[in-house]
Length: 181
Length: 349
Image (cartoon, rainbow over all chains, first blue to last red; front, side):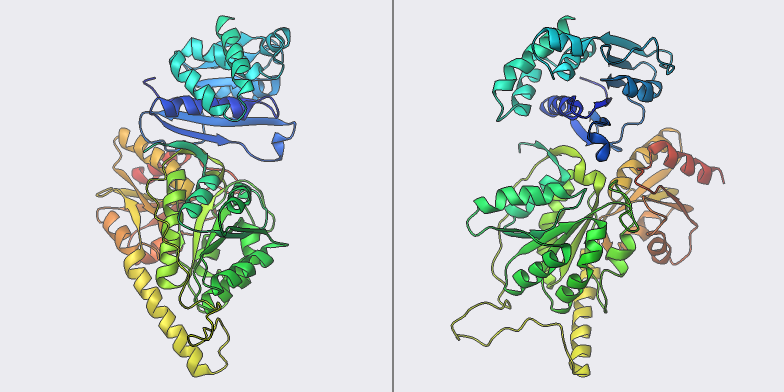
């Protein structure tokens, strides 16, 4: 990594929006970067929409609140509608196309924003890893951005699944499915 | 030193424990719950650790009063409405010259307001935290690392000057995760010699009291306390700042981080802006602000409030410089572009 990543992850509460963001933050930390992780906390998290800002940078981070992400992870339709318009030009958006129909949305990305549709929820269901659509999405994101080395990703996954070791293999499987989609 | 990713709230609790605070009394309120939760898990595992979830904030602060009165290092934490409830106990702690650390992870008010971040308790912390002639040293962290460093510092100041100390954080700092290092935190907790604890009649009894019906005695007590306050003002005021800026942005806590981004953007556009970030709000870093504004034509104060630090800035500058304000309320964190716009307006005037 040699740039500042301003990442916004968004979806329904329960989709692992915060967990996915934490994995990205741990990767940044392991790569020796400055990192911030800030969740939109509040009652909205109970089944409503939820989002989390992650900034990863070589230099000290000013605002931890991301207002123009260069990476967006949209896990459902409302999140796509709400945030696609603020993605910075040159940025990338990763959308769970099982739950968001980008072609039907009235919200449009700015010029120069690349949108990746991944049917992550369906892929999770087909592969018997329900609830890991977030990690499938991250698998694709990591592959498309060259975000970090496979080794760093493995280490970070070990850290975030500490105490729940049985989830490590399943999460790694999810990353692989995303990367290969 | 290894860094770990932690929330500001958790890091504050861990730092307190490492500094030797084994007693915590609290009552849940968002956005500071992770402090209480962390303490509830960690303290029972420590020899002599005491965690009590009190029946209310008022109960919790008076447990702190009792604990500190018995000579034991202790703390409590809450968020804005809860701090209002603690105000009576804080005044008693100050009146009895007892050390303790009080963390306020601010949310929006007045009333129940919002659970989102705010800095609208500046006046409360620095001017009117309780009834009576009193001041409470108030530390203002702006990162998870400073949540750690200032927690350690808060105990140090509290015990050195026998006073409660407030850490004035906000919801953003409490909820945010950042890499943090605990370094070598010294556990130097020792029972206060002035505490009211059992001694087998081997010394004069210690009395913990804030009631002085004899006017002479109360006046003497208050004057003695204000000598300590003068010493705190002289030695503990702290700030981080750029020098030689033409436009100085004054901001503390989370807003100071946003302001940092705005100032850096302004500089990249050729505007000679600088940041002044108080790390103590009382005592207000007057000398430091004067130094930071030696070359300034204007100051912009930015806060998540209607502008509660503005008066302190104006007074510190003896009303010699124009002081503008930009703030957000209601739980909004300003974004760098908003502050940058205001810097440009001032620059063009």
